[in-house]
Length: 116
Image (cartoon, rainbow, N blue to C red; front, side):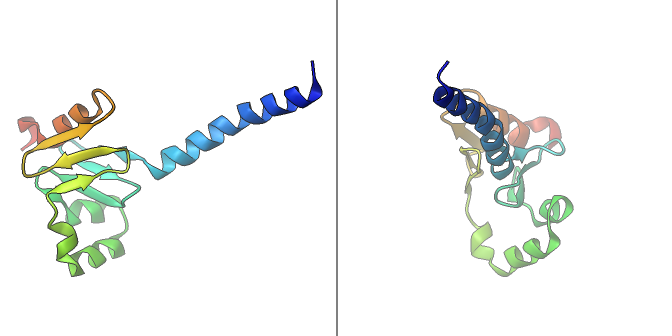
């Protein structure tokens, strides 16, 4: 086998896990408890009402929450674009994504009546 091709193949194989790990860190959106979605990329947590300073303080940096309280216009948006390409519309209680099932999952987490 050509040594040049071997080096290229090895580099390609080794670069995929590193890129995936970096991408996962930047776009980590998760649900720490029922009814809550936290976005590590944005450093914010949301419940069915929208941005929650209390939940953000619980799961992220408290100083960032203080900055958000000083800028109420940042909290006034009823639409949030999460860093995993999911868009949630809090006024309509609806989430959407181009990836099948992803929007529906976050919609169920945030707006399902079982945890209101």
